[in-house]
Amino acid sequence: MSAGTTHPRLRVFGCTTAPSFQFNRANAIPRLLAAIHLRFGLPATLAPELARLTKMADREAAYLESTQLAGFTAAEAKRFFGTPPEVSAALERDYLTPWSARDAEARYLKQFAALVKH
Image 1 (cartoon, rainbow, N blue to C red):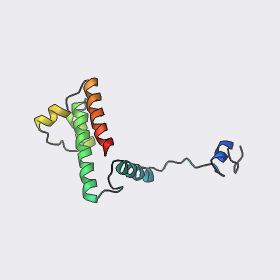
Image 2 (image 1 turned 90 degrees about the vertical axis):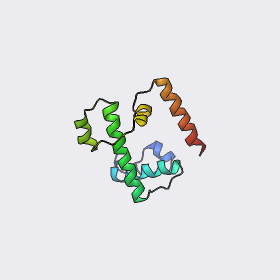
Image 3 (image 1 turned 120 degrees about the vertical axis):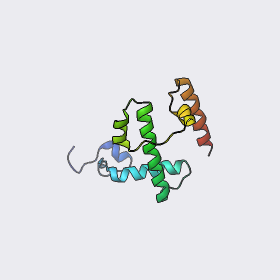
Image 4 (image 1 turned 30 degrees about the vertical axis):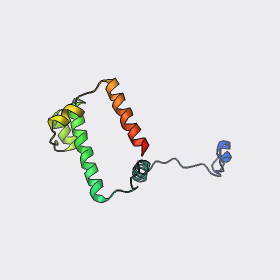
């Protein structure tokens, strides 16, 4: 197919030129986040303070997951995710101890059902 021609399948959808499939990460990430936020009833763009807190919580969770579940050393996790967060014994017991597949599935389905209702 020469430049300037259209693939027959694209013409079915009204396309007259071949689409560009270049991935632009700078545009894709904010658009993906906006779509996720809107799906769960949040504003497309979060207030700066809420966005900052979300990033901080994500880094803290990544640190804990890496050291408690994925086998990273504390030094490795600190290098990637920063200072370790303070964690209560209850939080560690409930969320940082690996669950059985059956328990994880039940918890996931319960939470998913609650989110979908909104």
